[in-house]
Length: 371
Image (tube, rainbow, N blue to C red; front, side, top):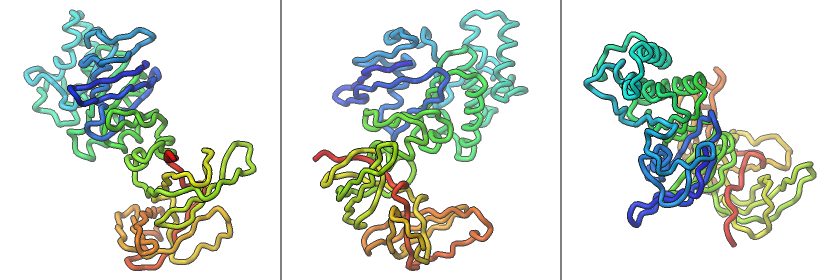
């Protein structure tokens, strides 16, 4: 599927601004962004519930804009399930086949097959009000899949579920995708959902497409300040390039020194060619920073090292998050994982003087600002 130059406005409000991306066959592709960013509108355009002001949506080279939803090769699973309350689970799933006037024996066979796929064998005669939220969502998925679409569109399908059930259903959804192998396009505002199951993610904000990439690329190499802040936690600073030295490596890579007002001088490697005086944004993820009460013994020249005072430690079992005040003015977030029995409790506490260190390879220049 290819989306080319799609824009959409409602009155004077521009919801989508020249969106262009390609989605591969069989991919689990997520549209990720905050509420109001345009992701659901884009999904509705793919589904045929909205038409773009300009632009094309093509399946196998054929533009499907203007075709009604029932003539497209896609089906949609909605946030609110959209089940028929007066029909049984069996009849809800069978409904698309009855519209096509499929024979009764084939309906019985196919409905049984898809109820098994979503682990609802034995629930066929129940009404929707007798089901849990997770079961209702599985009925909606089975009903959407029984038409054997080439693309399944999922509009925040898990948002009505509680956190634990949402995690369980997400695993089930990924397993269903692996079994049937069709393209899934998944709309969510939950970064963890998108990172957990997606082959690739498109991050959107205010109608713009900011970055498309694998979960690893989106998390480790954010393209903009917004992506860095939106995907996981991070420490983000504005700074200026003090120097840039080409490293002696087969690939083009630079060791850059940045002047960051809140921290001072830091080192970061980058493949982007930057020049002294340029304004940039720099990010370092909290889990990349080593925190210790003793000064690290390393003599490596690519290590950034700062002293600070623990302003707030937050213990949450598997990890402790520290807010460390550096230079008495900036809070740096640090996450320490507890992977061993000896780490069952924090040895660093409130008001402790600590050292923070990280490799130049672990930081990232997010944006080079216009001069």
